[in-house]
Length: 379
Image (cartoon, rainbow, N blue to C red; front, top):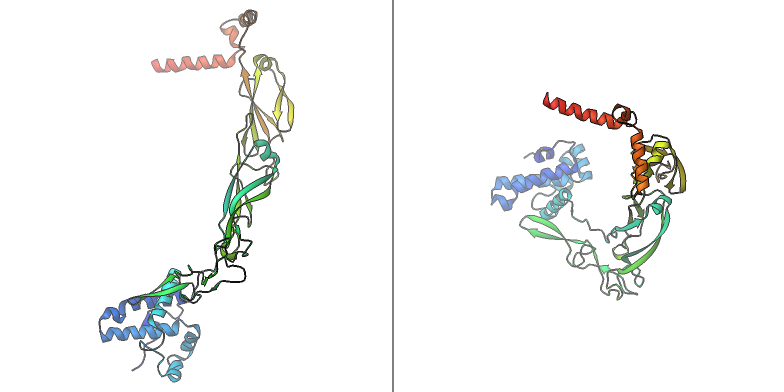
């Protein structure tokens, strides 16, 4: 009886990938395996066909020979290459299919040792420190490689041995019906090796707790939310594996005078109403010292003055921002009787009504707007 084409048996085309072949075989194996078909010879034969087809098509060399010579490539050499009674063990093949699809895999082994965890250190800076940069000393509690065993976890003069339970694979295979399930080896926890004589200092962990002191250069211009990565300064890895990284998270405290927005600084500058009316010069603070700011006459409260290049130098682009000063006119307090008389004389000197409006155009505009608002409501 002529054998069926293996690609037709699995229901895949001739260009199918290895993954597609395994998925197709898994589907047929679930459907036709004798444990499920309860002695149905016709369905058992379909399982044998699927098993034969899978053994050939999943192997690159066998598949190449089959594509070139067909069934003849195996009939003369083996007199029939396998079937259900011969060839690969079903549990092994099925375990390989499940492993490839779900991330395990026969013969695959968990990494011998895992890289150490990354750590985060929260560093608080003043605005001045953030703008100018500084060298900070950090004390970081962490896990470091054990000096006594060099990170291996084994006592001096001994070493880790191959696990006799999983034979160094890190995984074991559990049969459940016709399934073969891969599980992490319970004896070696997937490492493939066991330590029979643990180091007394680290108790076989290869790591010990310690507080490291690190000197870190903080670049000028950092801001809240910036992170500085220190490669290899995190926790030591298991059993000599590489260490993780340390991330220094920057937080800049609020400043009594300045507010920062990107590379620009902002501050309020209080001035007297005489300065605002007559004009003059006032001293304003910058991070480099005091500078004089010229106030033109008739300046209104809330007006902004920009001082170029007096902000923060960007840590990324190198461009320096500006200092923006907002003028706030301060009403005098604690006046003497004479000062009150003088202010009243000043008020009277501006007259009333239309005569006074030319001195206070915003006030007149406001009340004209209020009047129009109420007129519109009643009309």
